[in-house]
Length: 588
Ligand code: FAD
Ligand code: NDP
Image (cartoon, rainbow, N blue to C red; front, side, top):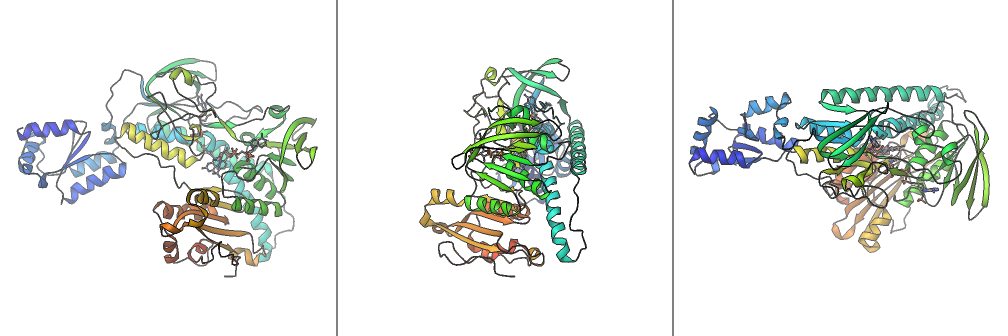
């Protein structure tokens, strides 16, 4: 083909093409930009082609630009290095990636304005798609409702972490006297002030999200949404006004809500985490039912705030987590005054007194105690969460659900209906964590509208349980490592540690503990990282990248520690569990 025709063919064949020279630093800048944005591109290195000069001449004739790089997106001429970078700065580069090929009102409608939905919608709009977010919060049985932002912001991570902080301050106050502060022996805590501060912060976040959507050209509709068919949705707003919306692609990011057991009095007399963080009165003597993340975190901060707290544990603590670590978390909480009723489940809730708080009699059964009962001012149910898929008409769209009610998706977050996608808490076999929903949403938008191919990696996602003594982990539990590699091939290094800040405050030496789980036959590849101690969340976040990059025990040994910190324990671990040697804390 003549060079001019060849140029046309190259431009037509690639969504993004950079006519480039392999040694050119300006070309590298443009390539780096697209790499950073996760956008797939073709770089045609003219210096490596026999007819490179002729192609450059033809480009000059077509564009008036003599030099490289020379960038085209979807056939539109963007220009050279500065043109490309400046267009990106002005927010006008990525929208070129998207070309409308359908007659629906929107390119993408996202159902659910939580962590995942907001992230995906903003990213898709930035890539030029016409996007709407449809979000609606059904009130709890108690009538609690909240604004835009989903679970994390309103009734999850954010209020939980702020209340955890209130709990840490209580511990700090206890320690403060040993450090010379003349704090009174007894200090009153105001639940009302805490709730007001937390709710004010949440209110500012709700507002911020609305502004962000407007700034990013995402339409926000505050309405409950159901499927009519794979491309058609019906929305009903607060006033009962209905609207029909059509969209080429639909993303379901509706998350989940706390589960209520089918027991008398459960919905009428108990609350869940959806109510706790905005409770208008102090909860008083509280029972938490469940022994996972939510139950233990809430029990931890309520006890530190001075409430009488009991946790009813059906079987084990923190199912799915390393059980040695889970027991350590629970031991510490027990020593901090949290009472555990093990091996028990509630069977009946009855009102003893009305009021704020009132009094509820809880009848329960356990193998050990048979049937027994006690009275509590507040009962918090934390027995798991159900996906919000029940009344959404997903069958009208041909979306297949798992037995759990969650949406089955492939590794590109695509459901059984090819134009319907799902992310976040609502997907089967996902991870119910905010950063997971956000990352999956962003990557999906980039694949749908940015020409990217990168998929969400659900492996080695770090997490932290924000109990009074935090538990951070990444990778496999000891149990899972043994199942996967066999006990003989798993080497576990461990160490108790006594944080320096605990010493003067006379806190026990044996509370904090760290372990690394390694695979012997793979050069002691670290496949599990676990720590119970102060700031475990912050520590684990940093080390998670080491696991992602395939760090070995030797890499941890080679790392020079920061002294005096808790994290440095990972740089000096020598005792293996197999050896049976003492791994308890040993001074500085
Ligand atoms: P969500 O954030 O739940 O958003 C879904 C939105 O869709 C909601 O606004 C919902 O009202 C709306 N919706 C539902 N159905 C419809 C419909 N039919 N039409 C319109 N709108 C609809 N994760 C962490 O990473 N760290 C933590 O510390 C942490 N702490 C948590 C503490 C608690 C108490 C809880 C409950 C959760 C916590 N999580 C934490 C989990 C985290 O909050 C979730 O993983 C995350 O919010 C999930 O995001 P999502 O986008 O999937 O759904
Ligand atoms: P989970 O599903 O993780 O745990 C449910 C708990 O309730 C288990 O202890 C379970 O016991 C118990 N349970 C279930 N049914 C009953 C019943 N009928 N009677 C008594 N007990 C029962 O739920 P959570 O609500 O704690 O958490 C949901 C998700 O939210 C988590 O998986 C997590 O991903 C996310 N999250 C993340 C946080 C973070 O990152 N820090 C914090 C909070 C939540 P059993 O073990 O016997 O089944």
